[in-house]
Length: 475
Image (cartoon, rainbow, N blue to C red; front, top):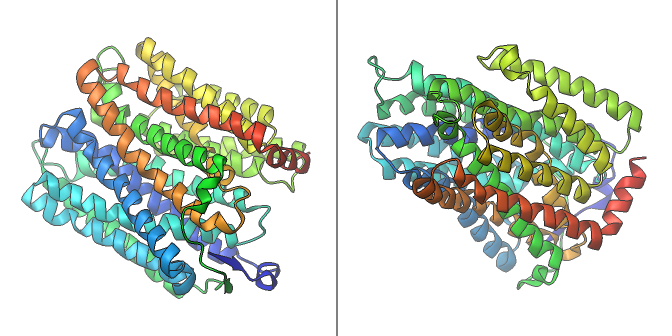
């Protein structure tokens, strides 16, 4: 759709303040998104829902990503890229306002205690995050050199994962305990004040972004690309499907963790205890993304990468330990997954496709373990999936749009549409959970990660130039 003016792009500028500001947005974005995992068991009990009905929370939220990105795509191929015309700052602020409005709608939904109103609020909230998905990720990629774009994206997504790590603990405390009814019973009003607080924080972030001087990237309009030309690239089509499966698998697993840990053959925990373990799932993603940001930094030697990754892993692990209401012995198993993550990164040699396949294969094995085992082994298996989800979004995204040329923007819109997987896959898993039980329902994400594994292998073979370039520059 457009290209960045090379003169502007190659200027040596300090983007530290803009990057910190956008990173703050990523944190809040992750925090509120992960609140869905708290809402699902909460609303399930409040409205006496089946697993299938409770998964409509994710269906409406992530379905908004598909609707919003489809509208954006249709506008862009007919009238030109809207963000290119309005500017990234205006696009980001608009997305924040839309998300804040979705949070405000929780007040009437809770007041009338009406499930469809909750779903409507989640849809509006999802539309706001769709705009942020399209604008903020692209903006981060422009705040520096093209070579370090993947590293920056992993870093900002690490703080997004920090938000998802804190949300189950803080959000769960607000809804299940602090704002719950005095007798401990479930009441819709427990969601009113927390989501008004979230709306207020989002508006403060919007105010901060509007006041901070963000670089305005000059663009040159190109001929509008019409039609579906991007679909001539087989790796893009496969990448769209892989992204569908990744988001679907990640969201489905996170959505069912609390219900999984409640099962008597697993741990028999209640929601208050389970929310702390849910934090470990998302905390694993945070650790993996910090490690991925370092691993993909091609300016570092292998020795420095190992040292920095070790320091980052230790620091983030201590942060998680300080957040969750669990003892060291209860989370010490995570050290095993951190070590395994290190090994997987170095076997992958910073090659995006190869690393993607390795991580997907590990998640397939962990899911199978969670399905066939009981007790702590099953629990540890399901919680370990998060750390190997870490680099999947950025790797699938960059591999899918590799080599598209003038179709890059169009291809990016299609990849964002694939976030629809977060709406569809949990619904199917919810149906299986109602029919065959929660533990057996994890066969759905098994197939999702198998698709990702095959996509990584496909790109290793057919996009070998990407792999070789990454590997050579990393050594």
